[in-house]
Length: 301
Length: 227
Ligand SMILES: Nc1ncnc2c1ncn2[C@@H]1O[C@H](COP(=O)(O)OP(=O)(O)O)[C@@H](O)[C@H]1O
Ligand SMILES: [Mg+2]
Image (cartoon, chains in turn red, blue):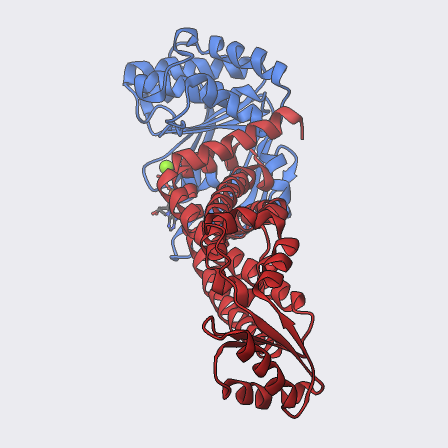
């Protein structure tokens, strides 16, 4: 087939989108939502993985002490911690240490700390090493029994929560994806049907004058691909905006960040290209595939 | 060349539309197919376009045995013929030019050829001035001339016309037939279905009469204009 012929068919496909804009828009929306939900699930999944991977000392318990406790009381707590059965090592970490450590880990967030008026929001605490991970829950409850304890954070416990979360997200995502796949296909089927209906005279005449099957189908293929392509672009823009606002919102919550570990949240800039490409490829592919299947079904060529 | 050998067509509804029809139309011939409504004329046309298949018998068109033809051969077969229908079958969203150029695009003709060929066939049917008009802006006679130009554009060996004058003013019918005659003079075989006896009497030539699915008359008669 000559290049001018290909161009003609592609133009026809683009024109189809326009002639059939209501249906194309409906398909665009459904594909957009599908891509968004799938994309959000995948990005969330990777973030959880990153968080799990970022927690290196899985046999460590972080103990944060109440602001009101004085130097002597802090020392006393240190001694109490060391006495607990199963604890192998206890290290003190002042709030200044913690603050500096955070700055080293993620220098790009200095501005956020500045915005807090240079008021160190962190607290003094201990890092408690445990010889046997299985004893972590027992030791945590003992630590919680002590006075002047503000907050106890066990990496292992958190890892379990994350793993559970990952499992649930994966399951829900699979269910959503299956449902959306069905809805998307129904939408594409109807759009293709409508598009074929708008062009039925042309198709009939095309058949009479000896058009090959691929000639008749190509514009519909292009139509599906173009619609899917734009859904991909749309999904990307929404994901970008949503991710960044969520990121900003979360990073401002120092307490939340303390738990998650700020450096463990993936920055959008580092995944932007992949997100864009995945959306565009997935959108175009689904759109094109759907059209091909349903063109075969609806036009008996 | 068109040849039917003992062809019968029975629709799934049980109607016997053609009954043991045998017929041969040689290259370069012009033949009228006449008969009353429901006689089976359109059924024969559909058979020749491979829109339907014969229930029994052999159909050969332009060297293709339509009984044995595979589906993927249909496009190349159809490129060897042109068609004109009573209802014009022009694409309303395309101009006259586009409607005709479309046929050449379908067969992937070179752009340069399309730009030369389309204006030429438009001039053959005398519609140069209407090149950029849409079908809605044309009279019935003009529409049918566009359809004839479209049938001509890929230089087919055979043009099949099913009641091409059925939807146009009687006085313009003559023009349409004149046009087809002119095309025939250049060597294209033409098979024209009509139920307008005046036309047939006027032009004469080979007349094939189908009645109740059977050929009851197949002779060459002299036309009034030739007498
Ligand atoms: N698609 C069809 N299904 C069933 N019967 C049909 C169909 N097309 C035509 N017929 C019947 O076949 C007979 C011949 O029809 P047709 O070939 O259209 O006649 P003509 O064109 O001579 O008027 C008629 O009785 C008609 O009702
Ligand atoms: Mg008829």
